[in-house]
Amino acid sequence: MRTRLVSTRVIIMASLCFLASMKLEAKTVDPYKVLGVDKNASQREIQKAFHKLSLQYHPDKNKAKSAQEKFAQINNAYDILSDEEKRKNYDMYGDVNGNPGFPGGHPGYQGGHPGFQGGHPGGRGGYTYFTESGPGQSHFNFKSGGDWQGGSKSFSFSSGGSGGSNSFGFGLDDIFGSIFGGGAGSQFGGFGSSANTEGTSTASPQRLTSINSRIYKKEIENAGMTWILLSYRPKSASKNIQYFESTVEEVASTLQGAVKVGSINCDKEVSLCKELGMYSQNAPRIFVLSYKENEIGSLVEYSGHLAAKNLKAFVQEHLPRFSKRTNLNNLDQFSTTAKLPRVLLLSTKKDTPVIWRVLSGLFHKRIIFSDAQVDDVSDLRIKSLGVDALPSIVGWLPNGEKRVLKTGISVKDLKSAVLDLSKILDSFVEASKKEASAQAKKAQTDPDDGRVPLLSQSNFEALCGAKAPVCIIGAFRSSKAREKLESILTLVSQKSLSRRPNGGSSSSRDSISYALLDAAKHQSFLKAFDKTGYKSSDKLLIAYKPRRGKYSVYRDEMTIEEVENFVASVLSGDIPFRETSGKAVL
Image 1 (spheres, rainbow, N blue to C red):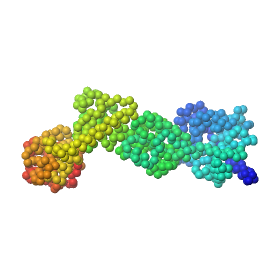
Image 2: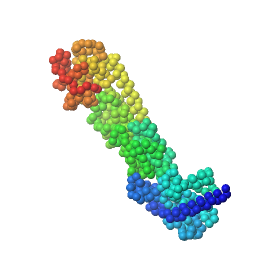
Image 3: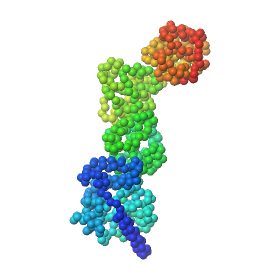
């Protein structure tokens, strides 16, 4: 047994000596020179230099053959200089572990190893060196007594991938695991091993939400919230991921309530990273879920200088833009009917405020957003809305009813403002739902209340559905036209024999119902009668026979007498009817 152990020890010593002799030929570099900074450079200067170079030589962007090697040098240089302890040891001894080197210098390396300015006191530098390492490299450290004093020395060689096997046909885990037992940390006869994590770093973001496919589909995709996503691969990510993470967190902290942040481990979520086009080969990558172009959202990669100020500007540029900019001369459009409730922000801002853009994303499927610049709250158009202080939010229910939701908005910070205003908008959405439900019930239970109803999805079947022999539809494009049509049709509908009770069971061929229609909002419906949708008409009447799919149009002067004559002609059959070009569906 002793003979086997001695033989094994000899084999290992021979292997180590061979590896050491091979490593002595390795190219050495000065981390300060690699990053191009002075020895007195601050951490901020080191970070700036590192990120400028890492973006320049990132293998995913730089296809030069030397880019990967240079990128590895940059990462290792930053690994040393970003760690105060390693930097201090390097400056004093030329070794990140603080080893003073070989007494008197190793033969052939008098005055210190080439590429290092530090050395052993007395002007004779220690036998230490710094070499580049990249993804998949293994590092081997060992200690021994005798003439080799001064602590552990690091020998690096390519392991040929993450499996730990190298070009010599064996792995370090095999040597120290199967022979000595206990894995790489075992010691025998003065030998020890430790894995240097520079090449096989398991660095990963610690404070960012970990994103998987389920979370992405459920909470991120099409949710309307802007996300900053950091993709990385632990085995190839060096300590620079910590700076990526800190930069992302810094931006997120200044935009709390406007953005969320997360990280995706592309070694675990391979299919998700490839599906999203964010697979990371080496350095981490930053993506922003942008709603700048459409409501679906798309991932946009940030490739600029990795500084919080720059990244923040990029993120703000890609916040949702669902709010339509309008002016005070177009306020009439808000009093018309719509499928969803509407809200209008009145402020002194020349551009849509960030808060409003964020809210337009969060509520983009439930509310129609608009905003307008107001110079003076004393403007009569503003006062007519019931607004007495700025900024203010005015809302309109789908039936056109106006409500002042908030005036004189005071903002403490972005996060609290988004939260407070979200509560107001949530309440408005609920009020809209209740109003719509009440209107639908009213149309069914009390259709004959004297008012001409506004045609909507909820009452269309009762007014102009298959059971209605004839319905007179007053289509309008302005609030003034609506008022006139509503006034005339209300009077005409009260004439004897001209109107049947909505929802009634009358089978008379002369039965007729009346309704108003917002032409601006229901172009597709009007195209069933005319391919242009009557865009040139501010107001018109359509006599529609749903059962037969036929119609007749009146666009002449709108007076009570003329409209009554038109309706009478419809009932008497004196007006020709044409077939619709398609089914009229609201």
